[in-house]
Amino acid sequence: MDRIAVIGGTGLAQLDGLEDLRPIQMSTPFGEPSAEVVSGRLGRREVLFLARHGRPHRIPPHKINYLANLWALREAGAQAIIAVNAVGGIHPVMGAGHFCVPHQIIDYTWGRPGTFFETDLEFVTHVDFTQPYDETLRQHLLQALTDIGAPHSARGVYAATQGPRLESAAEIQRLERDGCDIVGMTGMPEAALARELELPYACLALVVNPAAGKASGIITMEAIEAVMASGMQQVKGVLQRALSAI
Ligand code: HPA
Image 1 (cartoon, rainbow, N blue to C red):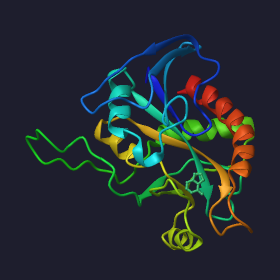
Image 2: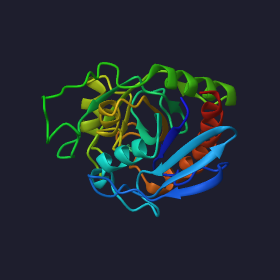
Image 3: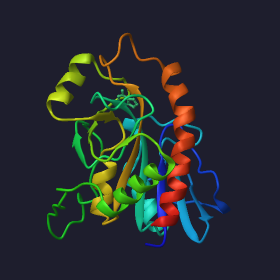
Image 4: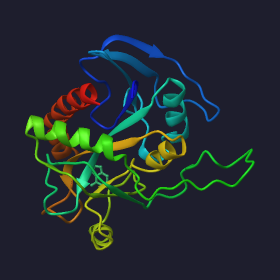
C-alpha cells in the first residue's frame, strides 16, 4: 500500500507532522468534497488528508458529501483509508478517552446518498459488506494503540446514527440491545462507499462521552471538548505509528 488517506473527524482538522504539504483541489461528478485534499509526506510514506466536516468545521454529519469525499480521495491516489471518528460509549468498558477499533457496524442513518451504483448501470451491483473493516489496517491501528499504551478495545460494533442531535437514553438502550458498543454519526455511508470503491478501510474511534443515559446528567459540549483535546493528541501518535508501519 503506497498512499494512505486519513479522514479526520471532529477534533482532527489537520494532521501534524506531515511534510511537503500540498493542497489538491478536487471536484467530482458528485460535487465538492468537504475540503481540499491535502497531500503530505510522513517519513517515506505519502499521506492524504481530508477534514470530514470541512475546514473550518462546519458541515454536520447528515450534510457531508460522502460520495464526493470518497471519490476525491480515490482520484487523488488513495489506496487505503483510515477514518478517525469521535464517538459516544455504550458498552461499560467504552469510557471517555477509551479507543475502539470497531470490527462491525450497523447503519441507522436515513436519507443520505449512500451508493455509487445508482445510475448509468450495466448491471445492478451489490457489494459484499460482511466484514466492513479491513483486518490488516485494523491490526496496524491496534498495534499502534498498544505501542503508545492507550486504553483500547480490539473489537466493537459501531452504531451509525443520523444526528446531528445526540440520542435519547431509550435509543441508546435499543442500540445496546442490538449489540452496539459505540455510537457515532459519520461511520455510514462512508465505510460502504469505501467498499464500493474497493478501498480497504478501517476506523479509529475515540470515545468522547458516555452515550445518553450511560452517565448521570446530560451530555455537554464542554465535557466532550475536554476529552477530545487530550484524546486527539493520542490519535496523532497512533496515526504516525500506524502509517509508517503499514
Ligand atoms: N452519539 C452520537 N455521536 C456521537 C456521540 C454520541 O453520544 N458522541 C460523539 N459523537
